Length: 396
Ligand code: AMP
Image (cartoon, rainbow, N blue to C red; front, side):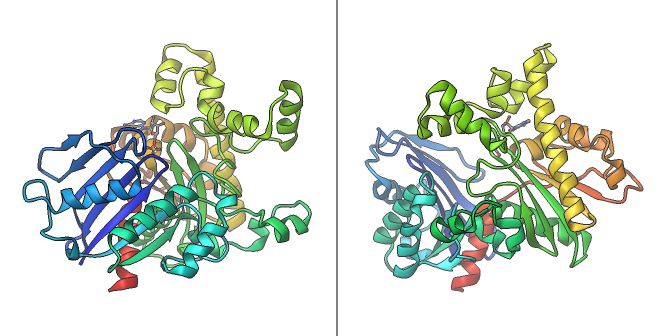
């Protein structure tokens, strides 16, 4: 069966077509500048990429173009749309109701629309991408895969904030967690390697957005992101967790509205905010190496918070079998991995520095030092494949 995976953003739509018999990606690509002027990049493994500027007035125009390219006699990989067995859609938020990947019908759509208020950035474009695909492919099943659903196993002790309980009841303010599909994927990979069904695993998804998750036996017990992807460790442009009073203090002192304050904490903080150089870890590391003190401070703060979370999760799980790094920084940056793993030997985490620094970028590698109690890995994430797999399992 062939499964199309769609990830719709406000002005973009990413797609991958999987052949589930072989697990191969037949084609993938990205529609950008939807609603502006439109641009598509279409890739097929081993073949030259195709890129063109095409007017894309909305998500429907984008998915129509994607299907046209997939079926094109020269650029395509299938003969007709009916070869697509199902479509998997990535949703950042499934709220409290969508606790696992689900076939999307009226009820699910109504629920997703009802939680847009707590998911204002990702919700509307994902819903509009889904509606566009449904209107263009009405005869196939559409499956929603939710980043939050991996955290449905978390105990209320981990997800209820210590604020008046009525606010949870009234507004569903609680910790949801994000990046769940990525954590689920790399945790499952680590569990396969360990061959231990009740393994205690900490997965560090470190990219432009970063989150850390603790899982026991492949079930999440805690995660660093919360009500929104703003909680947790510092990120490219997000502050992560800070004293809440800092927020109201900044608002008063700078005369900022709630929206302006959110923007400051979401888009102007983190690595960018402290370093003043860039939100990109590579730029900040380069500046640090050139002697830029604020860049060094930004990297040190990032590592400091990540270490604190790792330590707290070991305490929470009363042990640890494996530590996993993934996403842009986690998969590729041996320097940052080393900074994080330094001085964690008390917890059983010790890495082989040579193996770590020489690890091929983007490849699965074990970086454990011989004799260390905890095994440490860099594992490339593959959220799209996880979405395809869930979709396949539900429709086959
Ligand atoms: P992501 O959000 O997963 O795409 O990750 C983006 C982050 O990964 C940025 O901070 C990049 O600096 C970092 N990154 C991506 N590729 C590399 C690489 N080859 N080496 C070091 N860092 C990288």
